[in-house]
Length: 590
Image (cartoon, rainbow, N blue to C red):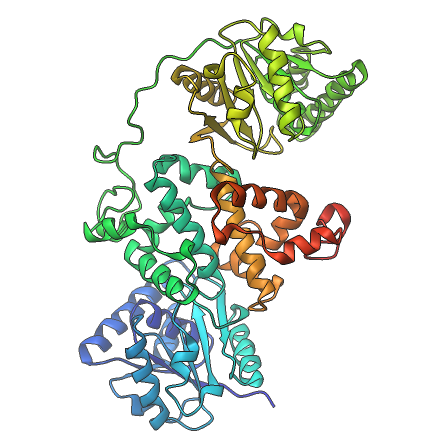
């Protein structure tokens, strides 16, 4: 029989505790909130008045509703006031000893059937639960901040939590209007365990000066559709909070990728904790302000860019989706395009593909018929490399095979005029391998467009150890001229986006493989809790499990990080032919 939860205790009236109390009271539940002393109660009550006042001003509550909500919350300074509650939610600061003491004392004053829940974001629920005489009735109930706004709640079961307790708590969370996901007890649970490994990896990239803070953040916003870049998100969370979560994760997992990047500790020691102190990775207008201001201490770029070379005509080598998309992008922005195909039939088919894409833009009102016709007229299909002799920039977009790309670059080197720039769209292969196939390595770089090229705004501008500075400046200027957002990085596996994205996806597969949570709950946690456009398993199925595995192998082969080793489950699915949407089966069935 389902447990009736009508009266709930909340221990701690800080930001999270007050938010949880408000959520409960909004759902018609009587709340008894306990703080250490009268001053703590006063601060908590002020938080509640402030939050509900904003809801009143925003039209989300009327005055009668606000008064009724506040009347349902009774405050106390004694845990004994919780003697008759059905559920206690603990929301005190993240210190295991303090939480364990609270639970031990709660055990003495509450009914034997009362369920205990901790709102911890990273500490072990098992370690907290064993301090009580009822470990089977102890769960994690992790709300996200701000609790009245964010829908996700992580319900954390230990190895001894009673199944009926988990079922009842999930039903209770749904009654509150939340989206509950269930998982096992591991540091970081679902959202933080996956999110903070990714954030830490981004800090290490910045620490190594692989890319600027602005480019790292822009890459993930424009390349993956994330609402915030990793460094800006860390500033919002608080660098001290992020450090504590990572440190807890590392001590449980012993995964080196969870060990907090040294730069985090340095910024914390310097008092730069993020938005709340007015400075973190970025400087802010004032403590608590979201407005970023210019700073001289950490300039966006330490090198003045040389003047770019002139680019009026562009060559594109290839006839696949990426090649035709790139040709369309340049043609729509007024560049002459020479599209080289291996045969006349392929050339005609490629131009037809561009014409069809332009037609879709016209039908959707994004392009006039006249502009579409003009763009198509700018594309000249050819079959000989010699036809590229006078272009200013060549973009290669052939198969992701080193030998094929190197042969193309060797052929281009023989016929394209001196001073022209040669670029590869590779997403994973070393750009220097293409450069080494030519006698002009200084003129070679990577221009990694994202698929579909006409729609995706990001381009990764990849310079090798040999790329000339004015070549990088030219590529950056050209990308801006065609409406793209260029980000600069060095020539190493994954560049920025794939290097940050695929270890996170791999971690999600390992979490599923270990039976900590279901694929559906992991996807829900990352979409609802972190605002990501797709969950990791949805994304893997869209990308293709074979493509994902190839990228993960490339990352592991280059960096030799144990945490980058592809999850065996991914290997097995690929071997079984379950490649995602394209085969109708992947992590999900279609």
